Amino acid sequence: MSVHKTVVITGASQGIGAGLVKSFLDRGYNVVGTSRRIGETTAFERTDRLALIDGDVADPKTAERVAQQAVEKFGSIDALVNNAGVFLTKPFLDFTIDDYRRLSATNVEGFIHFTQQAVRQMQRQKSGGSVVTITSSLTDHPIAGVMASVAMITKGGLNAITKNLAMEFARDNIRINAVSPGVVDTPLHATNPRDFLKSLSPMGTITAIQEIVDGVVYLTEAANITGEVLHVDNGAHLGKW
Image (tube, rainbow, N blue to C red):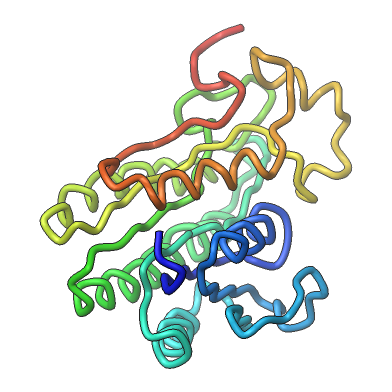
């Protein structure tokens, strides 16, 4: 791992995203972090190896601006983590088409904008690269009582495109992988009862943010792994428990 490598992280202001920023900085990467209001965050010490860019991932101009600033400031894009995501639960019959469009704009369109920008730059560099996307274990194993059907259209689509792009860009040595979490101890679940959250996996535990971060870092640096969906979910994808 070179200290000169640059990683772009979306949804970087809190939760998994903030953990990713800190871990990649600790490993010697230059980091470009983006979210809607990341410039206001006090989560990170400012350093010349960190660039924070405000923007909505659903807007293609955000991806263009982030890619341009990454190259201007650090000279390359070597890795991308598509972490920004929206999650919504309600009974299927209550979902609206506007709910779907909101989920799709962030989860799918944001993925497309950022991944296209990153892969184009990686191809120019001719030195390979890595894309890791955060999806969800609920795509493989729905849980009774967790009604996220329409959200899972988008997350399941990310698993599918991960495998397709891994094949498409294998000859460029650009690796495309995903990390599929279960319940993670993030602000998203701050108001949920802990006992209920623990019931959502066979191990009966809640995943710490660092466990997801470690999975992302592993795939980013694992030179022989592509097209992998790595489940970090306390066994939730295995089946009924």
